[in-house]
Image (cartoon, rainbow, N blue to C red):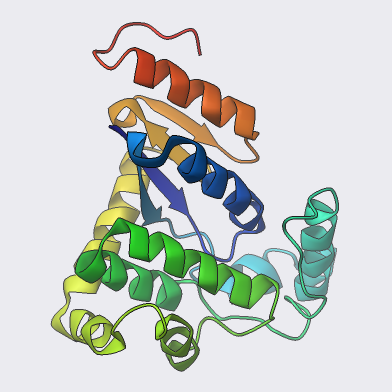
Length: 215
């Protein structure tokens, strides 16, 4: 089985665009691959990253236009016009914490499904996913939210998330999303096409003992 660590920030539009590619990877390769959702801290403080970082480019409204321009060529990644204009989550960390708790309590697949639900809620439904009440309501049909809250209260979820952030820094990941393959020796990041992802998976599946790949 090919292990893939998938690092992203739930508020990153490129990770929203990449969602359909991950869905296809899982559909095409099934139990040949294991896709583990992990998280990185890009939008931990959106006031700092967007309102201040984009101050000379229109702040939140300028960033909203940037997001709309980014998805213009991707019909599978629609974005609500209220995203970043009127709906401005303070941080991605509450969502990451809930998703880390789900991974700890229910496994990778449940966390991947919850990630998709939460991204859809923000980008399509324009919900503020920095609010824990919103997050728990979103994932309640999928898992037992009492266990999620227990994981957070006990510190387990915090430890999981800290591990993700530390690994992202250690691997010197350049951005979201990032796919780590071959024990972290191969990294793909950003707007990576499905054929590139598939080709790397094919080569690693054909050469599981570390032989040199053509990719």
